[in-house]
Length: 376
Image (cartoon, rainbow, N blue to C red; front, side):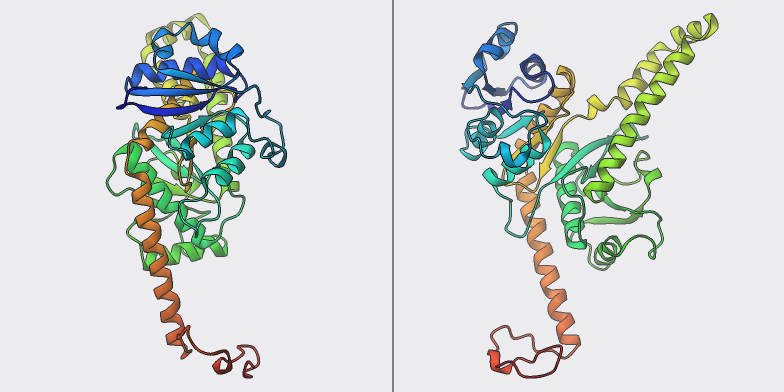
């Protein structure tokens, strides 16, 4: 492959449609980014017939053979035992430095488990990746929302880590120097929400950790563009994402039926066609396809399993944008600042209570906090 190319590893067998979408999506992505090259991981018998229909892609792609792939309903514990699958090989290409990023529309649980096992986290302090997504807003652009499915529950520190991941991602793909951050909550008042989100709010309010922290935002703010990055736990984020996607499809169906309801309505639809197409494009989930697994020591992007070729190309575009950015270095710097700041806060808290902060103290000099007795 050309030395100046940016190589993307594709799990060609992943998703509901396999090579019919993944290879065609890579061809579309190449039209938008001529500097890309691809590793197509999977079964050559299924990949090559599709690849032959895209000469430009064929000249900038290699097929990495394996006849093993992970089914969409396969349990992650079973999937990680098989090391020669198209998904595992694509991630291993990133670890080996053969590719700058991996893209898969396959099994989300297996993708999460294999990515963490193979690539590890960007720092030892991070436990799990967060999945981010681009969310269309009323300003004609996109906000970043995370986590949208990787972590069912999250404590205050994890929410702050998500904020840093989201800021680094948004800066990389949207070019916003200092993205504004909001914590998703059931109200904007300080007393609203559960303990962890209120604690994260307190820490961000008192020490922004280098972030442009706005405060709490509500569900009604997700589409307004009030902030650049919206932070929440994976349970809430996934419910919000799927609710928004379902609502968008519902409204498009209602609108389509209404515009066909009478000759006059059909005439109105014809006159308004350009505006309607622009609106449909803005709310199309495929236009925002591509959720990076943020926090990994490498770039992995998840595509919707049912994505078409155009949507899959968008996921490849997200991967390429991250691969060519300072995302990893920005995130490492932010996480180091968070660790230092929290260590200082903990030390100050001990000092304020009169406790000895000398971590070199001998065991015999330590007091048991519950009884006040000496520890022998």
